[in-house]
Length: 157
Image (cartoon, rainbow, N blue to C red; front, side, top):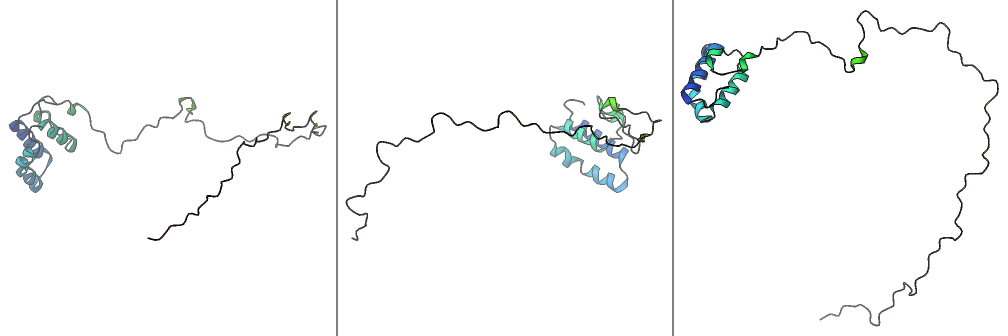
């Protein structure tokens, strides 16, 4: 992108882009609004040209001097996308169909010779109680509130 474009250079770029990309009434309307657009982007003409490139992709190289934006080829719409697998190891050959093979013999569960018998553990799983039981010690002073000598009654003035 050209650095420090002047108002005149930006005006020429806008005229060229609008002439190349627009037709008739729309082109006349855009060209008549160029002074307002230049006032709006006063001093920031490179941003204006950058926005112009985004909106109008068919800009010729003659319209800007050092523009590398036009070096990129546009993406064609409707072109098939190449699918890439998420896991590269799971790539399947297109010749192989995704068909599950059925086993020759049906799955029959074999019965074991001896039934499974649960063995009882040697010791039962019981929590052992500690030698000393957890007892709360009583505090020296009781938690009883003493009654005040006088009742809490508000006196009327």
